[in-house]
Structures are given as structure tokens and as C-alpha cells.
Length: 399
Image (cartoon, rainbow, N blue to C red; front, side):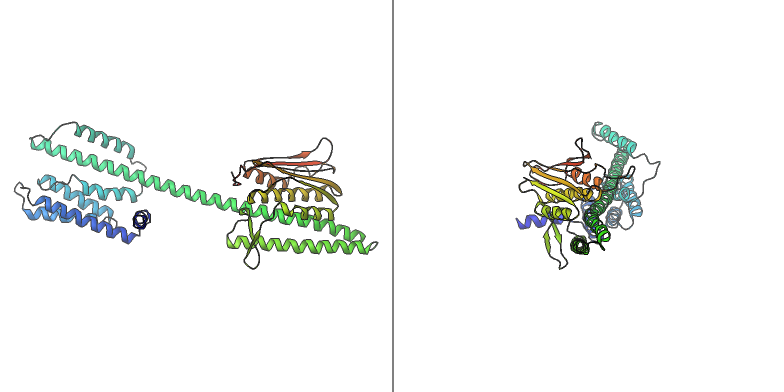
């Protein structure tokens, strides 16, 4: 089994240019030897044996150096094949020239006027007609014409195949480049979304408590000191989470995978449902009393992180735009999807007209990432509501 795996890996791995040149040299030597063995018993029409040996050697050399000088190698191989036909020496059917021409078609840039498709169709049609024409004719010029037409058809098909492989490789390279660019863009958006969720939530709480401290600093210094303690604790927690997130970026471990890196290089679990009470306590510090109703069982780590971020951003918006207010957070899961609802009894306004911000957009992106839905807006009974559904179907992988 190990020998089989080694053989498969030998053919699947990418060979270096030097190894490919060595393989071409081996193929050229083997091809020349076959032509020489075929030319010895063949009677020639007045042509000496050394001519057959010379043409066979020239064809072998052309095959061996085809990666170094493709056009020159093709000219030598084609000339040797033509002389073999004209002198009635050993005939290789233009196979050597076609072997070199394939690399020429694969490496040379394509001209705009080049009729590759038409050439392939004509070559295939010519081979089909020649195969149906019957055996060789005794008339020398018709025989010569048939050999030349057959060689031209083979070269035409080889050129078409080489061009098709070149276009396929170019298309694969363009697709890989586009996928790489898309991956970079998605990673940039993911990082921006994580940073927004972390910073916006904490800074909103800090801004609210700083305003309270400034307002009551002279009249109620104890309350001002409490607000400053909240600011200190929140800022320290935010800095810690920012260091975790930056550590993930340096090590290349995505937070959506369910882990985050700490400053010592270790990994810790990403925020999840168990951390929602901490969010509720922080919101209460800013004047938003939050009731949690969590009936979800164990969720996939990526889905759980998305739920946490949606609730975090929704509570941030309540603190920023509706405090003081009451808020209710509902998280339910049935094994196929998880439903998140965050409602408050505030005035129902979230952003200024014409300035939608990035919070709602980030929540929508997290829901859509799993093929879910998201909605947000004023409630008929008053206040504002956010609702999201994230299907995971037992896999928890982004759609």
C-alpha cells in the first residue's frame, strides 16, 4: 500500500523544470533508438543508412531540448520527418514533430488572428477522411500526398489540444486569483465586523457612563466614582478581547472557528451563549435592564459566536439609542435553526435619517452567512425589535 501511495504521489506532485527536461531527454533517446531499430531492416530507395541514422538522431535531439528551444526544436523535428518521407526512409508519422509542437502551442502566446477552432475541425475531418480512404495506393505521388496530409492533420490536432490546455490553465489561474482576492476581501470584512462588534459595544457603554460621571461629578461623587469603575472594568475587558482578536490574526486562527488566542499564545473558547449574562450586566450598568430567555441547547461553535455577536450589537444599539429602557433577549434552537430576538421598550429610533451605520449590516451579514434571515425595525406596540434566524442543520458551517 505504501508503494502504491508513493507511485501515485510521484505522478501527482509538481515536477521542477530540470526534472521535466531530464524526462524529455530520456524520451528523446528512447524515440531515437526506436527509429534506428526500425530503419536498419528497411530498404531505402538509394538513400544511405547513415542518412536514416542522422535523421533519427536529429529527431531525438529535438525532443530532448524542446523545453529549451521550442520553435527551433519543432523546426528540426518537422524537417527530419519531411526528409524521411521524401527519401523514403523510416517514417514516424510526424509523431516526433507533434510531440514538440504540443509544447510550442502550450507556451507561445496566442495571436488574435489564429484560427485554432477551425484548424482543429479541419484536422479531425482530414484524419476521418484518410481513415476511410482505404489502404496505401501503389502510385508514389498519391501515397506521398496521403502521408503529408496525415502528418498535417496530426500536427493540426496537436496544436489545437495544446492551445486548449493553455486556455484551460489560464482560466484556472484566473479563477484561483479571483478566489484568493475574494478570500482576502471576506477575511477583511470578517475582521472589520469583529472589531466593530467589540469596539462599538464597549465604547457605547463607556460613553454613557462617562456622560453620567460628568453630569453627577459634583452633586453625587460616589455615583461618579461608580461610573468610572465601570469605565475602567469595561475598557480593560475590551483591551483584553482586542488582544485576543489580534492574536488570532497573527496566528491565522479564525475566531469563527470557535477559538481565540490570548497574549501568551494559547487558545481560549470564543464568546458564546454562556457569556450572554455578562452582556446583560454591562447593559444594566448603562441603564438597560435586560431579561434573558435562553432555551437553546448546544450549538455549533461558529453559530454560537454569531448569536453572541448579534445579541451584543443589538444591546449596543439599545444602550446607544434607547437607554434607559427594558430589553428582552430570546434565544431558541430546535436542532435545525436558532432564533434570536432582541426587543426593547425605547422610543423606537436607532439611527439618523440617511445614516444607517454598520451595526444592522453586520448582524444581517452574520445571519446571511449561514443562509438565514434578519429583520429589524420599530414594533407596533412600541420600541425596537431585532430578529434573526440561523439554520445550521447539525453542521454549523457557513453557507
